[in-house]
Image (cartoon, rainbow, N blue to C red; front, side):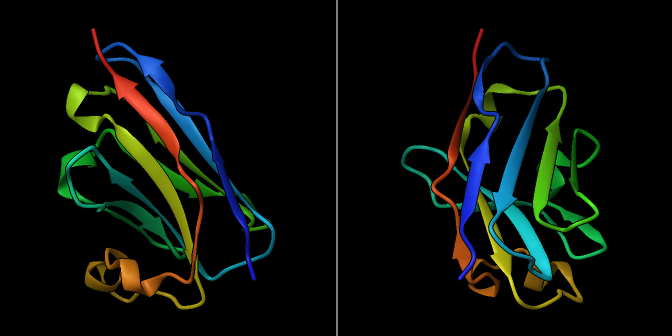
Length: 122
């Protein structure tokens, strides 16, 4: 069993940056960030299994990374927009992806964190 704890969320203005962290209690082969805004379905943001994968809406603005121990994942978010406002969830899994189709599917992941809120507002 792997426990995940997210941190780093907050309230920022459009154009600002935030860095989210996800600390895992054990190693996993893959990790990802998803987000969910009120009234919307949970959506894929970014994932890493050695390679990195991003949804189109965040390409060029967000960067996902892991530490060398592969127990902490980060999401550097730059040029934030109001539409980035959501609760961001960390996920971890036992398999590698092979494609963004697998990386972006919630069913790929075995463990989920409780989420951290990101609000982008003027």
